Amino acid sequence: MSGTPFSVGDRITLKKPHPCGGREWVVYRIGADIGLKCLKCERRVILTRKETDRRVVGSIPASTGVSENPQSKRTD
Image 1 (tube, helix red, strand yellow):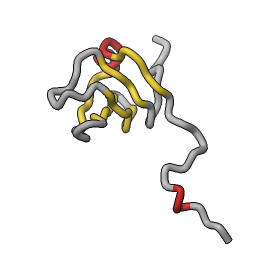
Image 2: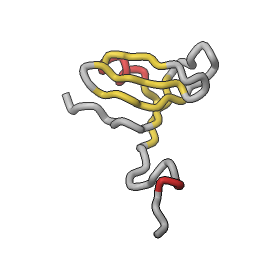
Image 3: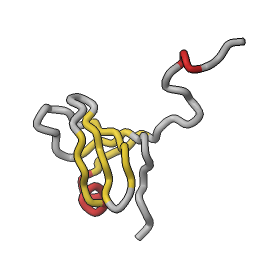
C-alpha cells in the first residue's frame, strides 16, 4: 500500500457524477476515511480509502503558500 495519493485541499474528479450533476470534489478530511465536498452543491460525503482510490479519475493538487483570502494580509 503506497498511501493516499492526495491531500487536504486537493480537487478530485470521480468516475460517476453526484446526483446534483457535479463531478468535481475537494478533499476536506483524511483519516481512516476520506471526506469529500461537492463543489457544485457543497454536500459532504465520506468514503473509505479503498472506495475513493477506486473512484478517482483525476486530481489537481492544492496550491501551496497562496492565501485564499487576500484581505487577510496586513499592509503596514
